[in-house]
Image (cartoon, rainbow, N blue to C red; front, side, top):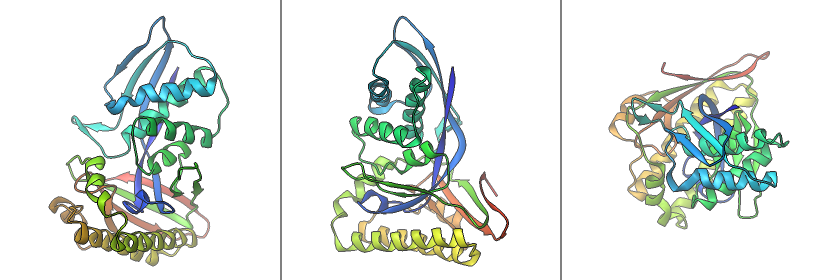
Amino acid sequence: MLVKAMSKVYIAGEYAILKKDAYAILAPVKKYTYVEVEKSDRLIVNSSVEDKDDLLKYAREQAFGYVGKTCTLKYTYKTDLYSGGMKLGLGSSASVVVVTIKAILEYFKVPYTKDNLFLLSVRALKKAGSNGSMGDVACICFEDLIRYKRIDEDENYEIKAIKPRGNLKINLLHAGISASTTKQVQKVEKYFNTKEYIDFTNLSNKYTLDLEKAITTGDSLRVKEDIYKLRNNLKYLEQFTNLTIHSKVLEELIGDKKERKTSGAGLGDFVIEVRLDYDEKRSTYEVCFGM
């Protein structure tokens, strides 16, 4: 039995989403992590996918706990999330956890909802020591353009599908450099309770919600302006934390285009270009690589 899980890209809310009550917008990407599951007399894991922090072990534990029984299986993983040996910054850790849980539930033919899958995946990642926002997990589980409100310690969260008025086109421009989200996040954690970080988060939430409204009302100009404001807010974050988000390569990719910004933790990985073509009769979005 072969099962797959998508990947994701951040449109808005990076770094702010690390704090409680923050919002982000994410889109699913059609690059997949796959796992084939077969009955086995012992646990076998064949994988080219990086498994840092025993993610697969914790994913299996959560899935078997939900099913209510366990068995030994052979897992064979493959992924689209590497290019020339380089990991693409599209949520590979979340994707491999989601696909593992999904595969076990489907192997046992146990019904589940997207919310079930999300919470099981979050719990697995937290068991592995992750303190991330889980926005990538939300997007990968729901497989839709979403507005996400960060899950809290009581497992309260919001995941809302965004329906564009027209066609929303998201171009992904790869910098040719892989970046570590964990290392980037560690550099800003000490600023979380500062006035500057609170101001940054409040502005990020404002612009993120403004962007959602612009997308759903077909306001193409406002989409471009909000992307520009989100980019400048990330530059404000750089100023008071001494964090580098906009490397030289990313700055060159952004150029003078207001509709472009970094996606995710920055320093490498992707620049995105976001455009909305207003059409009263259409409600679509597409994620493309390159121009």
